[in-house]
Structures are given as C-alpha cells and as structure tokens.
Image 1 (cartoon, rainbow, N blue to C red):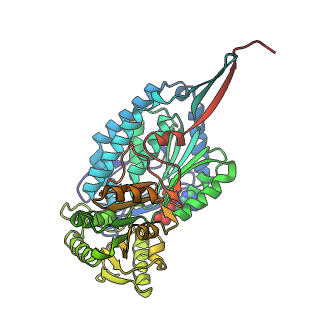
Image 2: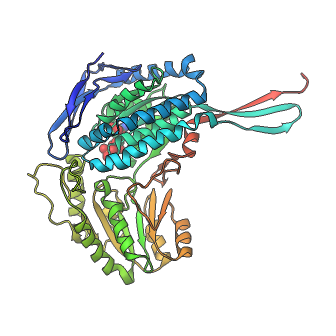
Image 3: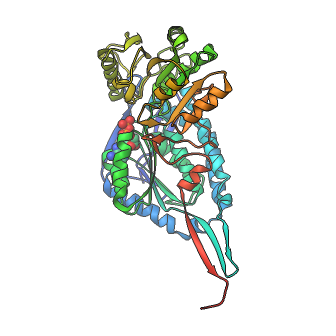
Length: 501
Ligand code: ADP
C-alpha cells in the first residue's frame, strides 16, 4: 500500500495526501511507475507529484470496477442503502470542506472563498440530492392486453469512465459520481493533470463512507494516455467527459470502439444580451461576474456581450470602470483579492495570444493592455475587454477560456438573436431586459441548453436543474433528474399471462 504524506498549503491548512491510485478501496502504486507534478499557479512552486497511470493501470482499474459491478454486495444493495452511502459521503465532504477547498485553490489557483462557498457547497448538495434518488428510480407498467404483463426496469449501465477537467475539480467529480452511483453503476474517474490532488482525497472519503471496494476507482494521468485508454476500453460501458470540444470529439471517436454510451459537456461561447430598457447597473455587474469569475475558466462564461446600440458606448464605459474597480489581482488565499492566476502557463500564453490576434484583426482594446511581464512569477492575466468586434474575428468564434470578453452593439430583438446564435456552440446565454415578453421570446429563440434572465451568477448551476449544451457544446444533460437517464438503461419485460400456444 502506498503511504500518505503530509502537505501544508500556503494558508497553513495541512492534510494527509494519499499517494498512488485508488483501487479496491486501497491506495496502491501504479504499474506505469510514471508521475506528474502539479504547481501552485500563484508562484509556480511545485506542490507535489502524483502517480500518472498508463494503459495497464487502466486495465486493472476497469477489471476491478467490473468485479465490483457484478458483485453480490453491490448488486443486492437496496436503493435506500445506496442513497445512504451518498448522503454519508456528503456529510464527510461537509466535515472536510476546508481541506477540499484548500486543495482545489492551491493547485488550480482559484479563489479559496469561491472554492469553499461555491464549489464545496455544490459538492455537498449534489451528493445529498442524489442520495435521495436511488429508491425512487423505477420503471413503468404498460397496459397492452389481458394476456400480457409488460413493464420496464431502469437498470444501471455498468462500468462508467469519467474524465473531468481542471476548472472545478472536486465539483465536476461530484456532478459525475452522484448520478452514476445513485443509479447503481461503478466508476473509474480520472482528474486532469493540472489539478490531480483533490480527487484522491475525495477517494479517501469514499472509503470512509464505506462504499464497497471497487465501486469507485480514482486515477490520475495524462489525457492522451490514461484518458484515451479509458475512452477506447472495450470493457467500459459509458464515458462521461467535461472539457474542450476537440477533446470531446476525440473521445467520441474512441468511444465508438464498443459503442459506449456518452455524455459530453464541452466548450462554449455564450452570449450575454443587454437591451436598452435593462437595469444597467445590474447588467454591468453580472456581465463582469459572467466572464471574470474563476478568471474566465468556466465553460458557461458569457464571453460575447451584445448591447443595444443606444446604450452601447455608455455600457462599455461603465463595464470597464466596474471591472477595474472590482478586479483586485493577487494570491488565491487572500480574501481581499478577487482576481487570481490562470491554471497554467499554457493557458496564460493561449489567452495572451488571443489578445494579440484580436488587436491584429481590428477589435478595439478597452481594457487589458497592462499585462504582467513574461518574467513575472505566476500565471496572471488581467481582465481583457474588447469593443467593436465582429463575427469574423477569431476570438469571437473560438472559446478563449480566460478573462477575455468581446463586445458589439445590436439594433433590435431580431438582430440580437441572430448575433447570439451565430456560433457553433450552444451552452448558455444571458439576457437583461425588463420587458417580460422580450425576455421570454428571446430566451425561446436562443439555441442553448441554459438561458439566464436578468442574472448571471458565478453559481450558474443548481443540483436539481439540468445542465448541458446544444450544438457543439455537448451531448446529454448533467444534474437533476435528467442525469439519471444518462446513467440508466431501460429493459422492457413481456410476461405471458395468457395460455401457452
Ligand atoms: P484543456 O484543453 O483545457 O486542458 P481537455 O479537454 O484537453 O482540457 O481536458 C479535459 C480532460 O480530458 C482532462 O482530464 C484530460 O486529461 C482529458 N483528456 C485530454 N485529452 C484526452 C483524450 N485524447 N482522451 C481522453 N481524455 C483526454
């Protein structure tokens, strides 16, 4: 068994870091012998390294999850008892919320208060919510004739591979584990290489909650090796993924190996519309939250802002001032600070690349010319706002995933909708108007999985509300009752009540 080691974060919170991969409720060394290290994005110091698994480790992980799926212990566990395991896991996450929030803030760079107040609050709610479902997942009886009893059973899919991103690590794990376990599946889950630390800690809580061995397997590793091995594995029945659209496409291809069921939550280029009658102060406030929260590293970030022409210039000026006043750049553990580093050097240089592209393509830079010098420590990118962008500009079409927003004016409702839907993505959209008929009409016309009317909180999701995208923003829905159908399959039974023929 691999021994845990003590780590102490810059905030002086200490915890015992499990080492190795979590298989059969034990932390064991990897077969691959490879490791990957993770850094604090604030000062680029190395925090620690973790085992990085290869395809042989994935074979072992999947075999263990398969055995657990077939086991009497898991198969015969009543729904109510499965639910109790999830609510006990929620309680343990509540007990250790400061540790989990510290870990995610440390290796992701996200604000600690946000990790605690938003991400961990959601993790606990999601596990509690799905803890209430297992004894309520049932089929139907279907009237056909006196000679036949027809009914359906909602059965688990089997072994699920779950691949999560780095922007909200433990929260993304909860979104995926909650419904999968509620429905009676077993899971192999892999964290992203940038944020490998919180998921093994969650694994130790899964063990403490007394889930049967092998029901949840936790690994770390690279997408191209460990992730690809999971996506193509012939004994994985379902793959659930959150991340970029290109990776989603690669996973979809790999999942074709055995026609896996898939759930994909991919990229976005979500619009935010401000109509002339809107409450301008509220629109400005939520426009900043919509793109600058988590330093723009949210798939639902509202990264294209369209404002009705009569108030466009006023809006841009107010938005700029509000963003300057409310973006205090610094350390993720300092509560006075609200703009922390990006997750990695690669993300920082990608965002700054888009800054240059937008300038070259003729957009007008309103805010963001004072970026830190390349020699400064930390992966900081200050808020970037462009005006007078147009549909042909690269950063209007592509997801930047940073504190980077393009703005443009629109004439009327028709023009607003046309501009909003002129994208290959369809994750979210926000709109600000005080006219109720405009709000409902525009919301219905926008091709997106979620529309926020007169709001754009960071906490853009709720455990009971379906989350997912249209077009290239994904396939399927997470959260709420909808996620249950992503983790079950229907068996139809035909029972002869008539005479033998
Ligand atoms: P980003 O580009 O922002 O790093 P990705 O979409 O590449 O985000 O990564 C999200 C998750 O997908 C991570 O856990 C990563 O390891 C995984 N991943 C990346 N490439 C692949 C792949 N080819 N197959 C399976 N998983 C992958």
